[in-house]
Length: 301
Image 1 (cartoon, one colour):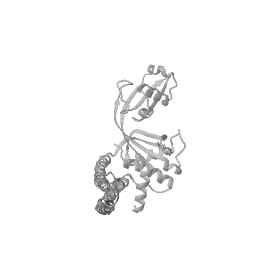
Image 2 (cartoon, rainbow, N blue to C red):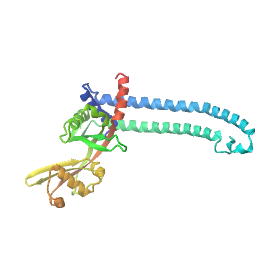
Image 3 (cartoon, rainbow, N blue to C red):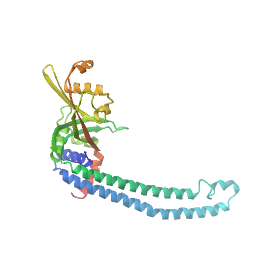
Image 4 (cartoon, rainbow, N blue to C red):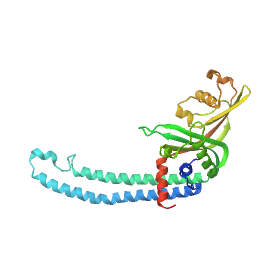
């Protein structure tokens, strides 16, 4: 399946091209990312440990405050008894102390959860590193800075021919960003607004009929002849779901994409050859790439 490292590599390739520097190789990115994950996990664990060590001291402070306040409270009139820091009142320092303990427990639980995620990420990365070639697509999206962060397509090109990932990802990262004729080439100033998605294609099968596929699971590659001309087009597995299309709407849209201009209610009269496939996709925003890249530069790698 596609991995974070694949996405980082695409960003690295494009950024290096636009900045006029030599990019890291895929294997260098994979090794660096593993080190980065370990480094940040260790830092997070250290921060959690520091918080846990601080809790006893914080408790002592609140206990001292409780003792002092209780002494003052005992000399107060009955009219101020609701401000007492005794154990039965909601305002008691015991509740604050419990909150501190809960914060520490939450931090420890979060650290354990993150450690589990790191293990899962490492396992996924190890599995991804075993894939050396695959048909693939690289998609660039522009992420809106407005609330909600809507996405708009900025470029998407790939190939159904298996590619060595080091060469294929770097090539199509640039081709989709700079040579998609539907858009102007991506400029350096746009990098902070971009998100990249890598889809490795698998499980190609001939569909029994145009409806023999599942929304959200399969991508489609269609081909057909009409008036002596051959047409063809593809949609990745996530396209139909993102657009909210039915199967029929997806097929008609795909035929339009291929260049067919017939009446949409007559699409069934066209003999379609449909190949369904699946796509193992991963995406990454520029902010995560920048954090990793800054770490790389700080390490002098």
